[in-house]
Every structure is written in C-alpha cells, then in structure tokens.
Amino acid sequence: MELAPKPDRKAELPKAAPGRVPVVDRIPVPAGEKTVFLTFDDGAERDPEFLKMAADLRLPISMFLTDSVASAGYDHFAKLRDLGNGSVINNHTLSHLNLRTLSYEAQKAQICGQQDRLAARFGTRPRLFRPPYGNYNDNTLRAAKDCGTEALVLWRASMQIRNLQYAEGSALKPGDIILAHFRGPSELKGSTETEMTTRMLQKIQEQGFRIGRLEDYL
Image (cartoon, rainbow, N blue to C red; front, side):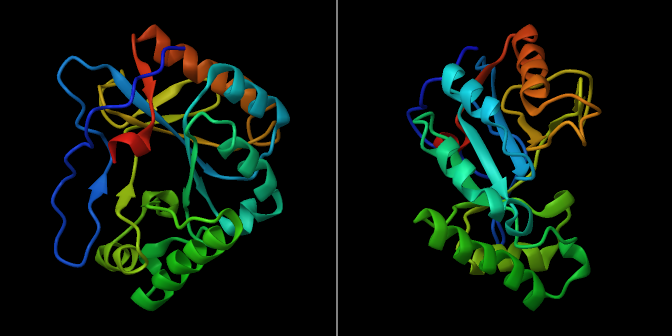
C-alpha cells in the first residue's frame, strides 16, 4: 500500500464562524495528488490481527473513540497509536449520543468529558472531533470549540462490509476522508476487521490512491 509523504504545510481549512470549529469532510490536497485518509470510529473491536496488519503496512489511522464503547480496550488503542505509524486518538464523545437532540450544555459535557478521559488515559487532548452519526448543529460547533478541539471531521466515503459507499458519485476523489469502524464478525456478517480493511485497501489501490496521515494535513 503506497503511503503519502508528509506535506510541506497544513491544508487551508474552511472558514469557521467566530467561536465555532470548522467542518471538514475532504482535505484540499494539491492538484494531481491522489491521497485519501483512513479514519476508524467507536472502538468496539480490539483485534490483535488488525494491530499486526497496521504494523506491517505502516497504516496511519485516525481513531475516533467513544468512551462507553472503547474504554475497556484503551490498552489496545494505545498499542495501535504506539506502532510508530502516526496513528492518532481523537474524540467521538463519551456515550455516542445523537448530539442534535441535546442542549448545548449536554453536548459540551459529552465532548469535554471525552477530552478529559482521553487526556487522562493517553496524555494528550485530542485536536479533532467527530460527532456520532455525523449529526451536529450550531451548538455542536460551539461546544467543540469550547472544549478545545480544532475541527469537526466528517467523511466522503464509508467502508461497508465488502464495498466502499460514496457520498457522491461512484469513486473516490482526492482528499476524501474515509470512514470505517472497529467492528468484529458479529457486526460484519462473519468477516473480521482485518478482512474488511483488506478489502477497503484493495478498493483504494484499484482506484490509484495512496494513504495520507490526516493529522499532517489538519
């Protein structure tokens, strides 16, 4: 799997309203650069084979962890972070609630609470935040800013069990952020997390793309 080198500079983020974080679902990569980005959510599955795959392929993975789902396996995600591939742990709230149904105060508790939990466990406060289900409103953008995150990260393609699903069209586009999940056979109709990821990487390669480290661009 071809990996993208670190860019010379960060991408220029979309402008955010005062007191809000910007929303990012695609990275503005230089013209002609066929780079996409891997993100994995939640944290339900902790597959040792996935650690081996990530190590062998040197995959840079942006992890968006939910405390209620991932906390029992935080040691696993620390190992993934510490492989030396540039994988990073980010914020996906405490409880994976639909933030649009919550008040500003409740959203802030979900986001800041996970900032605190991850900082206490891993030693750093995440820079990036992803709302559960991709659902957010203006209060989310305010709360994310007030909790110290720098961007709300969505996606333009998502990995299902066997195929990529696209927000538009039928192929990847340069700068696409790809969503996958830490899921095991019970949720993947018998497939393992490693098998699903293998198929995702094959789809990326077939379309002539390479993998970049999201945090190098944001």
